[in-house]
Amino acid sequence: MKSRTVIILVVLAIAALAITAMLERERPGQLDSLVGQRLMPDLEGQLNDITALRVVASGADGTATITRGDGGWVVAEKSGYAADAGAIRQLLIRLAEARVLEEKTSNPTFYGRLGVGDVGADGGGVQLSLEGLPATRSVIVGNLETRAGRGTYLRLAGGEQSYLVDAELDPPGTAVEWLDRSLFDVPADEVRAITVRQDDGELLRIESGDAGLEVLDVPEGRALSSPTAPRSMAGVLNALTFEDVTRAVDFREEPPAAVAEYRLDDGRMVTIDLWQRDEGRFAALRVAYDPGATPPADGGDPADAGENAAAGESADGADPVEETRPPAEPGDADEAQASASATALNDRLAPWVFRIPAFKYDLMARKLEDLLAPPEIE
Image (cartoon, rainbow, N blue to C red; front, side):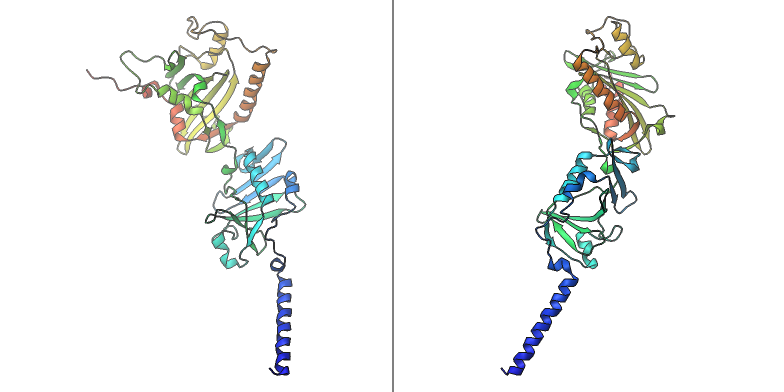
């Protein structure tokens, strides 16, 4: 090979290297790879400084503002109802600890394949912004990597580069999904008595007996449709959650269709006002502590039962079926603690009305006839 040709090739090689170096300087993400590193390396030490999460997703309900105050996390779009603090903390920790597995596309044309496009665009993700930090941090969370089961695609808002990180991140896209939707988790075995009063005064009474929960006032010649019918009603407080929440003032002028009362073994009394509207079934819950209460036996006001029991008689004036306990004395630490717990729960639930699953509502609002088998035809 002639020396002139060699010189030309060397010059061309040097020029190619120079061009490559220049392009890499213009794209530092390619030169300084984040693979193996945390995407937000300083976030872990700032988690306690975050004061708000702002979430934007596609859809009419795709906006949520979750703020942290003295009482914990709340959702602004749901009138300040409590958010699921555990889920929020888990999400933030996972985001802070997320390490880059791969650097993916920086071409907006291909964002939709990963779900990291801008909100509202085809293939758009959920934009999560963290406020309260020296500078707001915002990330667009895309699809989970399900083929290998190893992470989530995301992109820093305003940036071009997308990434696959090793954490599973799936932030809710609606305000209601950020709520702490648990209400009660009381096993059926802990329910001692149930009364359900319809708006016309009809009353269903269930009490603990020798054979477990028993339905009272069954008409002569009639029988239960199933021996487990009363237990199914007792199980309604087990894993009770809600679908949505609103302020109780929205129902203030509307009498409930039925009122259900559950007396628990630990002395708590759970009273549930029930409404049925076109948009769903709703319940308002009140909790009190009254270990001496007995259920009403004459169709009287359930609230009067505790007073009658404390006087040593049942609500219909007959001798009490079982010995009643006096109200908690101030020196009784266990009962004082139980009373305080009931008060705290009531303070959390009483200002609200909850939309609950239809099948739970139907169990709470049952009538005596609903528990009976059809009459025999002679």
